[in-house]
Length: 201
Image 1 (spheres, rainbow, N blue to C red):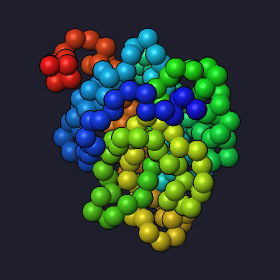
Image 2 (cartoon, rainbow, N blue to C red):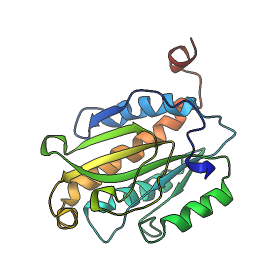
Image 3 (spheres, rainbow, N blue to C red):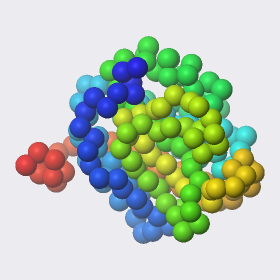
Image 4 (cartoon, helix red, strand yellow):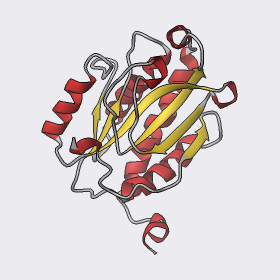
């Protein structure tokens, strides 16, 4: 479907920031603004926040969506909140709805993931679509032109149990950084700034 196509050049290098680092949201916003500048602003930017509030670790996406909607950022359409989550059982249906409502949109997926112990707390921005459910052996449609993930806990063994027993404080703090970074990135990208010289020289 066109909402998952990499229609623009998102060849920026991957980005990583630790959520406890100073000004983490501003660093994230600066990187995302560069990516948003590559998008035509007459197209929609759709943030698809994937996960469920039934699992602490997997609640990162819905928390980001809820916090984003509370900030009412311009240009962003948000799907996936605590009240109306986007998860494995309804992902295909939600993507069809997005395709119908935003046929020329650029999608950005947000999700929790598991990783190495030394990487827990990292927020990553990666090129290409997200493959939700891969860590827990689920086959789900890919989402996004690029994606944002937060490493909430250690992976590799009993992933469902690990997600259920992830500390809420980590997930909440990471959600704050991601939501703030997205909202600030839209403001940066929609006004003339130093990023023009980075992208268009």
